[in-house]
Image (cartoon, rainbow, N blue to C red; front, side):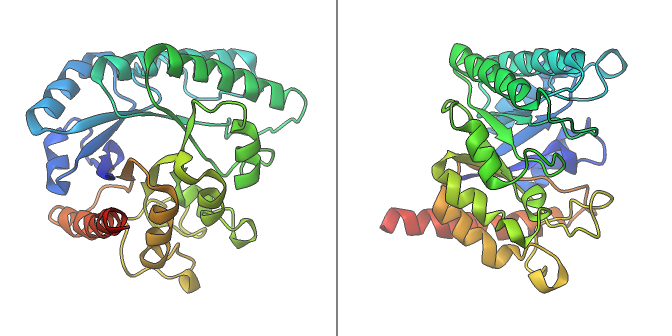
Amino acid sequence: MTLLGVSTAALADRDDFAALLAYRPDLVEFYGYPGSALPRIARFCARHGIRPALHTPVPYEGAAAPRRFAPTGPDPREAAAALRMTAATVRCAADLGALHVVVHFPSPYPPYPQSGFEQAGQDFLAATAALAREHGVSVLVENLSAHPLLRTPRQYHRALAGHPELGLCLDLGHAHLLGPQHAAPAGFADLFGTRVRSMHVYETTAARYPRHGHEPANRGGTPAGGFLGLPALLPGLLRRTRPAALVMEHEPVPPGTEPAVADWLRELIHHHDDAGAIA
């Protein structure tokens, strides 16, 4: 069964957890909250029967924390800081009983030197896999689209080949921005299959990204207009991957419009789950 989730990215006021209830979520993915917020997160989820998930970094202490999450450097101090933030998030996830932890990988920031990049990436993945084993937490690597040495489905598949403990959070928008030559996001689904354990779902086009680039999932976007075309794309992705969660990761929407976004995705999920049960 696939859970329908929503990211706290959808909040206009990051402290107004109650606003997320308009989506009737099974899961909430919390991103960038300080340690002082963790008890409130736990109470909110318990009160409403919601499963928490975390997106690294949590806890995030604002001005006292590193400004960039750069697990592959090239600055080794940034890479070490990213691993510390990942370790802290995994520990918090274990305490909260979170469904998963999402980790951006690799570093999205230029420059992109090739020297030392692969080793830095493998060191980070090995350490993260060890954290997943130690704490019994599902850790998911999120695909990005910036780094020229690691962004395509095949590149991610090779990078993760030696780390079976790690799953994939398939960010549909990041995959879409690679362009049709990489057959993404379908290419990720074909290569990773059920190793895709969660998806970040939103609409975007190259023209809209990154500013205003996380638009709510809807029936109207078409590939001809540069969008993903989610009505045609999502059923096939669900069939090939059977993820534990779909997480809405759009920007804040006008009050009252949340149910329309969530209900359409919930309908797709129920159709997929029913079809799987019959099969």
